[in-house]
Length: 587
Image (cartoon, rainbow, N blue to C red; front, side, top):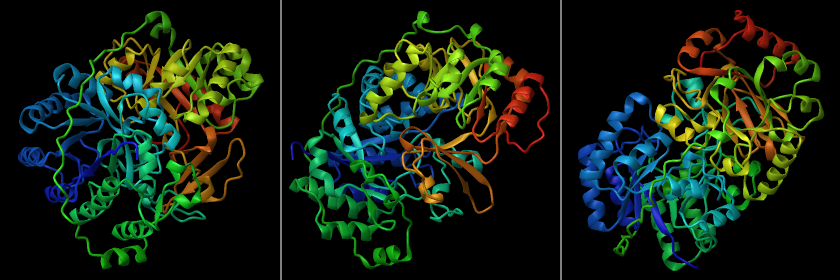
């Protein structure tokens, strides 16, 4: 084993913190009573945080505090007061942060605090590393979906690399799930997820969204040889016994420089599993074997096992992070389109492509026409190349980069000058194009918008979780959903295969039906990834005047399952301020 990574353990309570330390964790991560992605864990009030800080320092264990939720404008004063308390009274080794706006404020006001980029930031590519370093991160927590080759490539960037090795996996790309928020008013981006992925649906597999827990205990030596800095165990909602038992196994594997035995894997499954474990993302075996639920036999096995980990040896002195300088990105106006040139409607086609007749009738009414990158060079679209924006795949893995670069080159050659991007790494891939920030940037506050302005985006789409009421004055054109089904989940696994079988066509369609009979369309895309859409379309076209006063200059119409007749009706509604004759939601 080339190097021995650190072991990072969860602590959802003080008892779990003690269990993690006793079992041999090098690092722990925990949250306060607010602003963390496990708000329903026991967590730590301010007094308990101070006490936890003292305990970790005395044990020579690094403490990372989670601030990994989106922050609304009205919360910035209180969250910065909280960070001030953490910096002066708790003295953590790092803060784990998601919100781009909060990152900028912490770097400016607390330059000596080490920051770790949360997995909620959707870190999928080594191309992200330079951006993360430039805004002062010392470590990145990579997305769970990454395979071994991508992890290794990222670790070579020089930025400390942290990966999940054990525990629950979200079926949706981290930081991109809006399902709980939209259908249950409990935001996963705010730590309130109601876990709709664990519910039954009417499908061939009754639990088509429930993924087994991850276990990479069989790959410890490979991970170490990749240059990974820290191995993270998920579980801030788990009991102290679980934390102690799992940490003790991984501690032994790291100390002995080996992979888990069959007996140790069986023990970990007994501690907690959902029909066993999966290593599908790490090994690139992404298939139906990754799915499972917590069975009665799993529960009986857990109840029969004694969890009494042996107390670990004292840790060696922990390292102090070297914090890179914070560089606020500077906007290059010559690379952007003026907001004055971007007003009206964005026609976005995520289902079937528009016909030549439809485009001939309505292209003149559109400020922009968004088409998936793989489809944007289709012959009927090319007469409108000056208005087309290529929608980039939400995540681009290492083995896909060359193919995506070739598609971008073909789009440019065809005269397409715009790209709709959803990640900072897309900025490198789409260099030389006018860039339009997608809803996946999770813009819910002015500070995040200001950060994105610096990256020379021409427009930014506000998050569906925001109310769209931003103050005028952005350097970017502001975009908001006017009509369409909100994309609720973006999955690397093919959910359609679990619903009614995947035909592996270029584009597959299916429907996920929940217990109430609500129907959620599912459409496959790049690399047979899936997007799950809301059962009802959002409709805000009757709020045009109000949104315009708040600075929104672009209203996006997302078309997924609509036939051409309905698409024409929606566009006519948008142009005429007419009243819809269908069921809709404001979310």
